[in-house]
Image 1 (cartoon, rainbow, N blue to C red):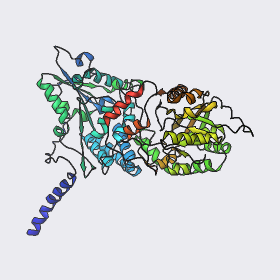
Image 2 (tube, rainbow, N blue to C red; image 1 turned 180 degrees about the vertical axis):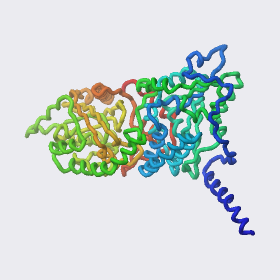
Image 3 (cartoon, helix red, strand yellow; image 1 turned 90 degrees about the vertical axis):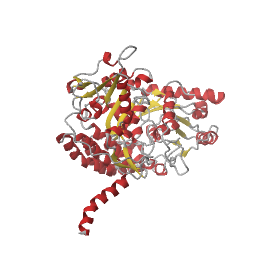
Length: 596
């Protein structure tokens, strides 16, 4: 009999042990929530008025003597365009691949048929599917270093924002902070995925509530489990709604007909009116143009150059083994053959380049009385192999100078060893002057770091002081990649060339611009050299159709990694620090104006 009693107690003891393990790393332990009731068909209040359209401007406008309206925006259902199916799956796949690696991404891909079946066949299955995807994408990731929600996801979510839905939310928010507090943003995604995008790029102020679930942590790692109990998870949203109700205001919901997860949520049940957009109307909506982004997207991280929908992810995993072999083959061709032969073979594999305009005249030959004059080329920075394509276009060897280049990339360079800079003005200037004095052609990237978007970072003026009598030749570079980016701010920089060379196809565009006179910079000091650097930056931006900024390498790394981008002696970037959102927001005020 005692043994039978022990057997009955074992399941209860095991449950308590598992619960204790999952809550061991949480800062504020909570009592276990009661089991949730089965999801109804919809939790819309029986007294709510449902409109089959977007909320009109007159309904959202508030002012003196009018009823205050709080708008609850369904981020997943109405703010994002329905043009892509399985959009949430693609966002979770981005987290799995960029923060977890290819094996975790493969596990997420294998999970896709099951989550699709859950969402389609079971009432309330969409919420179960989100929980399952969150478990696979986040389980085991370190909380302190997770930055995909801020550095990777916004670039893709911004492309899916509906301009009409954002306009409606802006009308409700108004221009002051008190009006902004009247908008509640609701999402089924975990808070770490959606809130950085809303705060940083849609400029949602701290006064506005974001209703999203928290992820549980244990010993500093995500467990992959989402908090249960909407009253606890949406505390800020519930507080805002209760305050508005106490003041006699109305609560209006804004969603789409196919967003059943939101319509079943407690937030929908609190709404006095619901504006539910039909699929026919949503199909007429247009994506938010880049020029109308609330804050320009200048920096983003991640290896993927495509949104990993299920079909695109299958194509990537199918291509990956061949891409790895092709990257080694392309590297061997580039390092072993002359340019005129290598470029033909590389073009046959999908790696091409094009020359715009004409080549600059070659430097005058050396003689017994006049030594060879060096040539200085200043180009914008897209990938680590920018100097290689300048060398290919010129059909002669050049010397590249760089600040942060891994030893592996340096050894694999087909143009020889790179001259490493130390961020010391006197030492770096002397090193480049020696190369130019020896008659070398020197390629420098004054931005100091790469930028993927159509913007140019601030040009360091040091190069303008070294042009001498021959001046500097600006070079405009543009790069296209189909599958992988060849740069990263937070990953392993030693594999950058392999990622770029693993693309099915890629193309570099090289354009040599008119030479810029730098004699005034050599005589006028730092102020004159800054003017020359500004002129070179503007000329390259005009050729590419890009926009000039005053942002720097430090701004980029603070935004994407959480540090200043300082590289140690071994070529490793310093470890990430805590996010500094206020600093990043301040730096983006430098998007307009000229460099100094």
